[in-house]
Length: 196
Image 1 (cartoon, rainbow, N blue to C red):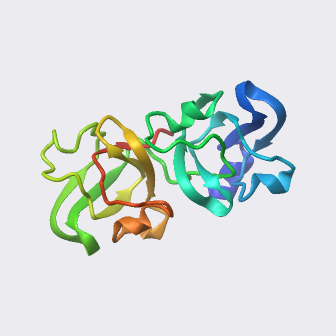
Image 2 (image 1 turned 135 degrees about the vertical axis):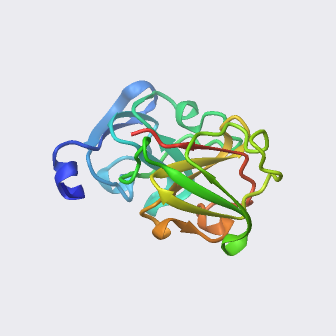
């Protein structure tokens, strides 16, 4: 089954509202939305994810801070920004994460850019990379071998979120600038598989 057939069967479905607590204008999506303002919305303030994992973005055209959206209700921005040190009260674009496969995910972290230096392969969630033996607060390059991951700036899945996917950049993130359009640092201290 190809991605288009999966989308037609409702593999991915999200409903967005213009106001908090599922109020105001609403619209359902099964495909990406590059700019919610083109659909007559000023912003997105609440979300229900019914199927599939999604990534939301602060700005149109999939720009700005990223937020992981897994199945569930997000009545206010705190629900999607969580323990992020960076808070945005709205979202303006989003897309499904098509390569997420929780049972078959593998990622390799490197201590230097361009996949150089010491490396560590993982296939499980780590709330603290330092506790599992990574000797630095920084991860300069990452290779996603399979699945999709969300890396966090701080331990305990807090801080900036970076969505890392096998089907983006061929899974190769040669330096931290490729983690996100808003990546200001290569600081990554926790990482987990994206739920599907």
